[in-house]
Length: 325
Length: 127
Image 1 (cartoon, rainbow over the protein chains, first blue to last red):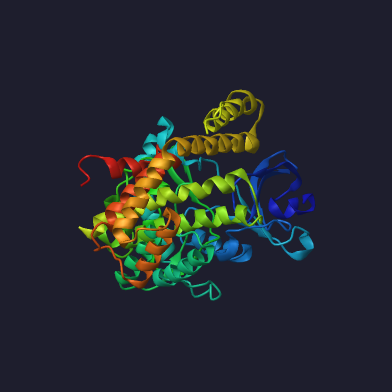
Image 2: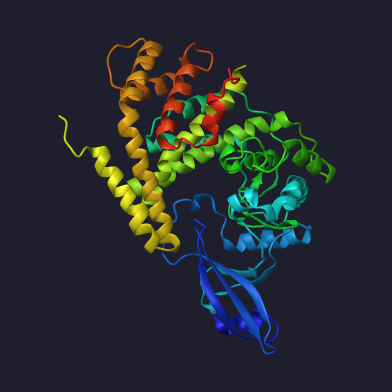
């Protein structure tokens, strides 16, 4: 990798502090720095496809070259994202990979939600998320012809097929599939959707949002998917009273989204998508349990997450109860 | 059969061994996995204590809902899933949501009693 140093930073001489970061289901993420002749250090991130490792959640991932292209377009549109420094070629010897800038900040939800250091950031985060999503959704997807498209009903059908195949019967999930299908809103014109917009994938510092990470589930779809995913109770990390990510009000998110050029949505426009989001997360928990059960990737973490299905069943019951009134 | 030490006592002892002796000597991802393992054992402890009553209550509700008098909870749950898929049972069916809510509450009291959605479901003004 040190042969890449001059490409990654002007005057780059060597690589220091290479360290594998945890997290990332289907890709390896490494932190390192390039040291220059002048003794300066440029902090960077390498993302690469793992060498032969199983990746149960990678079925919908778009591939690293596409991620890099989207992040470049997003940066150009003023979205806070790490800048793409280099997309690796076969002669770089790293396989499918790219290098991007390393932002400094916090991604751990409990710290962002509970530390005093982030009090100011929390106060503006819903607004900043609304602005960032409006900018993402306004990106012209013309240059991204191969980017997959999936709307709400497409996802419902795909997740139902997965659910039925797992043979883990949940009456709450079955009822939710039926209800969502019978009550689906008319689709919005498709836009570039991030696909996993929530705490954990947002880099935040004391001043607010500094970067949107993990674009591997990006697709063409309905803008309400992104606005609702961050509202799913599982992503409020215990602060259920704050509908946006456990830190903000939905009205603020939607007002900032509309003010920045996005469609003017009402809070109730988000309900259907929030219910779909809870259902999807519940089935993702089942998929992770299945990776243990099938011996594809057995671990105490994978088997235990199977018991988080009941969290989403509870959330769905609460949402269905509201819908039935 | 009443065997001492009971399963619950054995599991609790292993959980506390992990928590008090093993985990302090670990770091990074392994320490995290040890914590997950403790959580898994705590779930089993709660299931041993609460599971039989929760299962009996769920079975009684399912029998009333489906008009069935045989079958264990798993078989009746499968039957309910089928009835929902065919549209025979829906959100409007009297007793369905009550059963699903009671089941989810019992399940979470075992799996994750601190989950925020449980507090929402059980707060007094949520009727």
